[in-house]
Image (cartoon, rainbow, N blue to C red; front, side):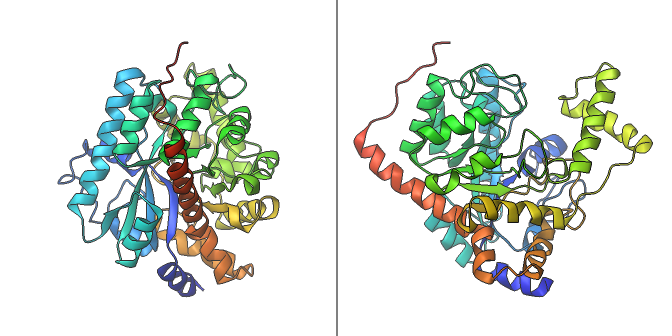
Length: 387
């Protein structure tokens, strides 16, 4: 069955919505690709070009994440460094990667036998409340912006912070409108339900969830509630189901909650990633981590299909953005396992092609069409954040 899944992915581009390899490379090697060569099989990461090939990846949204502990100019500068790394990565391996700025370019790069490389910025702090910075990110190739990361931004509430605005503030609505004018996808992973709802009210173009799963199956604030999934058909948006164990497995989510409680008792901040990794290693020795499965990921994909429809579901693995992955999806070589699971559940090739990448390609094309119209109707936004 895996060979059948590999053949399917050779015919239809698998477009993954979120991969944090750029930040992992920064942390491990300071962007030195001679020291940590992505063209070789790496240890210590989920991603390299060898395993992308093995996994049948046709297009990758490279996340240019920076932590929300950075703010203002520091966040913008670090985001530019991340974007620069993606451009260097593509330029260093033109035989294997090709930069894609449009849906047609994704198709063209895939047809050439290379992995189409797109850029997504993870968190509104990356624009430092500046429309000019937003436009600059777009000019450099960024094709989605996640409105928040784990912390609120001044103009939007995060899913994992205390609500301040109840959703989007006035500047946040303007950010969404300007993204529509540019043709940049509005990414609603990480945001609060209020922000999701407000963005859907405002956006003229399809939104995406670049790496989120279903709250009905696992009650985690990073997952999407059914009331929002049910709005995707009217908007044309896509929920790209993630593989993060804490979002796809209730047992894994409970273990993560126990880890957070233990950190708090020890006087540590559960939201500090480096502390969480070091403390978590010792905690796991005392309390073994449960495993998530490929079947559980498939359950979330099927739930999006049931609530929103087959045209509104995609894939967003979050490789190199999480400390553990489901068994069988241990790294980017594992995608055929997931599509083999869907095949065993009776999914047709046409349905699998949609979830693999067809749906997000359609959303990107529609966002481009909205931008072509909106850019004729209005000029660049001059909105400023006034606090």
